[in-house]
Image (cartoon, rainbow, N blue to C red; front, side, top):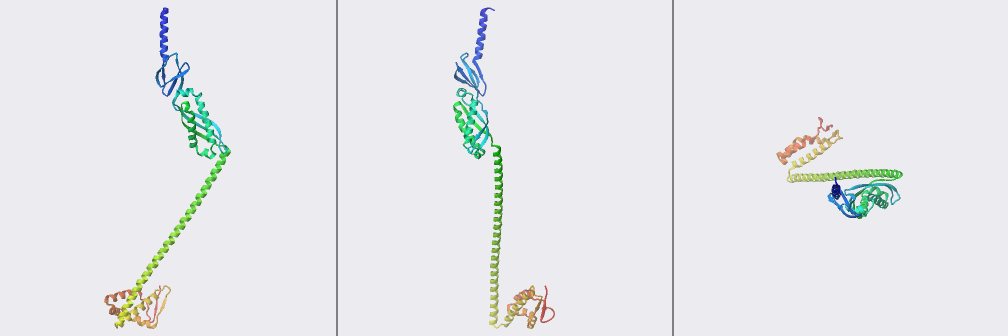
Length: 332
């Protein structure tokens, strides 16, 4: 092989190496920065790219996907001087590879330091109770502050989550006692409230019962009065009819009226629960012996139908007077 051939072969190899050096393939999810003589010139996107060999070189290979950083534990003093141990995580994404490469050195360490500083600032402005019960508010305030701080670096902080907030052991014990006391207090209050409601419901029930009973008595009294009124009207009407009959000279009507009253009074005496023996006056036997004639009197006074009805109504009220005249013995 002559010297020319060797030179030609070297030239060909140099051309091939130059072509390979000028072709760059960027993977999905990454951006590459290109520097010319040490100065940033442009950013290569995912896919096939070309650069000028020997003048341009790849500067930084930036991961453009969302990434997570653990925030180490640190002690934080709250507004009411309680010390708690806090850690967390932060999720961020690079949206400008050039700024993320040249605006900040050690990007991850910068994010961690910035987040830890703001955790102390945010939680230090809150009481212990707020720190323990307002975790979402803490996350939201941290995200707003840290995201604004890292924006010049070409980053976007998507979330910051506080993982654990650990108070001191003695404080945890005190919180446990406080929680137990609160629960006992609420249980006592609920029990007292239940008893109060129960007493109120029983009183309401008794009140409604008394009202209903009073209304019942009122209605019964009204109906009794109405019944007595109707009875009095009927009695007055009957008396008027008898008076008219007497005025017209019919003495039999007067006899019937007196006999009917006598029998009714005698029936009430006989139905008395304490009455075992009924003593009758001698002249009553005469009236009793004339019971058979009462039907004839009523028939003569009020007609056939009225006499039958009066006899039917009078029959159960006549007591058992026994075999002897002048006395009647009955029993329950």
